[in-house]
Length: 372
Image 1 (cartoon, rainbow, N blue to C red):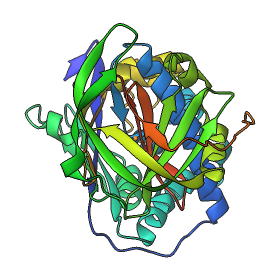
Image 2 (cartoon, rainbow, N blue to C red):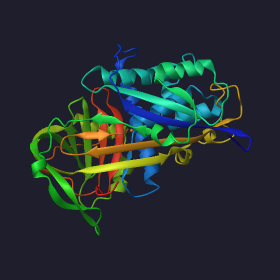
Image 3 (cartoon, rainbow, N blue to C red):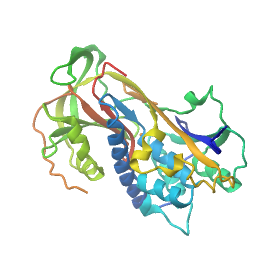
């Protein structure tokens, strides 16, 4: 399809869980941790832009989005390349004499996530083009090698399914007892409440209180080297102001200061399905040329009339008593929390992350657990 003389292409991302061969790390672990750190800040920047559009539930795979743009880096040049680096917080990893360094770094991160434990994760993508044009063989080979991705002529009937993200964290280390789940009140705000299925478990968990932020943090581990970190703002706290403060340094302060204690945990059972047209959001973060006739995608094709028309992202999560099925430098004073209960009965944030690499896989906000 040609629009105002510009040939359009759609970049869509698919994330699935597979059992894949695990290879020895190619890059230093410190570099992988640096990438995870930068991805956390990118994730929160993206979260804040999404939150500007509405005050409802939010859920996306931050790792999926950043991985997709790491692939697009191989197709871009000039100002488009620089904008992707800046918006995705990848500037420090750019090596002019090693253009494959960033793709290799993302590939190595995936392999490290899969290396230990039962979680076997493969990120895969698909590049959709609306009409046929000649794709550079170097780009096509690198896309397949580093991201296991293919290039396809766009099939509008299948586009919706192709952008879905599926991860399976099947079991909590300490499951909730379904016999204790009962309807309870969840306070959306000072004026609105809903009745939701509230799960219950009593055991030893890791938690911490962030007094300057005005919130408590609870870690709920899965059996596969992945954990969910719950950030619960204090009663009457403004969750939007808290979200404005969250960054990678704060996140790592939480995880390094958690202390184990016996707790009664009450948490709503919830399901969310979220779709995002990132081509409408990313320009507000500074990524503009990619979606206009100023796009420089000369490493994708020698055809100069190319731009990205759509970046589609869809994420689904279901949290219940058994586990989860998910289909993304300010010093903080941290003190230990002495209460024996952790009741999640008001809006909260959650982060699903891989513990060894500290890679943030998903970011979410629950305002109303009774809605998608």
